[in-house]
Length: 91
Image 1 (tube, rainbow, N blue to C red):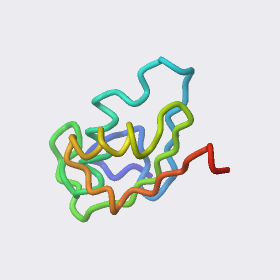
Image 2 (spheres, rainbow, N blue to C red):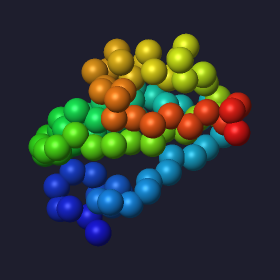
Image 3 (tube, helix red, strand yellow):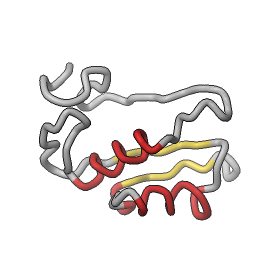
Image 4 (cartoon, helix red, strand yellow):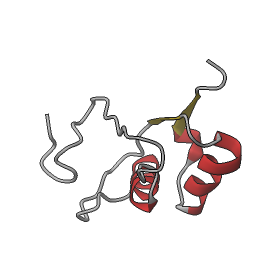
């Protein structure tokens, strides 16, 4: 399951969800930075090299993708070509 180096609560090749009430701080700098590191093949929070850039699926019902989420991720250095955004308003 877990690859040994990195984030013990995120299993390799599995779906990981972060859920909570609006305003709980789910899209804080930590999560945006983690997505940026994953999308560019950077490092985990404990300093281990991720290796190849990873694909990320990002779904949010609180903020708009184009005006809020994507600009935040870009400021963190994310490769948004590796991120698929699910917009609840379209569903």
